[in-house]
Image (cartoon, rainbow, N blue to C red; front, side):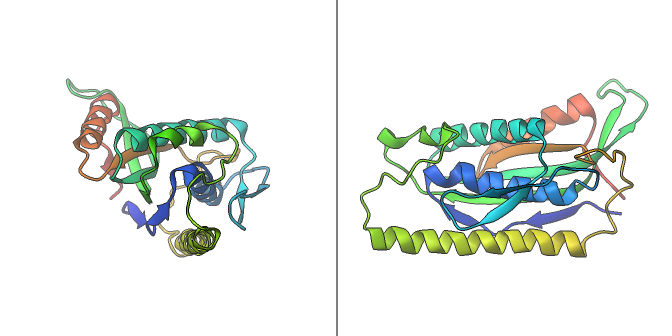
Length: 218
């Protein structure tokens, strides 16, 4: 088996939409890869006419919100860049320790790339997306223009959700045996990068030294 990669359709979002959009996408992927017992919970987006399903796991919700906070921080520090989140699923394999690695090795079998192009916001509005509540667009654009842009985002996000469902229904052979029948079945990690960002590569290198090379299943 190999590591399957899914590049999700790029979404054009405003700063205040980041949290809802990322929650929707990340929870949708994790719900479809949680092959164990979960407590499904329907969530209605406040900004868009879309409903998605969460696993009903408070710890998972906390971890996702933590990563979204990090993503928002990166967007604010590096405006005018296309930003990306990678959700990876892996197996843990024990191996003999060497001088450069310990005996834990991660075998990545699936990676999802979520691509966002975040419109730059006036500095006075920065940071509002850190609230757990959704903030209404503070811009001065006309109601008609806002409505058209919101409809376009809603359609694009629906396309992404259908892309996720299509992928999980078609790509099954690479999924390893389920190690845990409770909740989230497989170990996962969420990493953040932006275009032309060498720091992301350094982060990957550090994780390789700490956990062993991120070997692809073969």
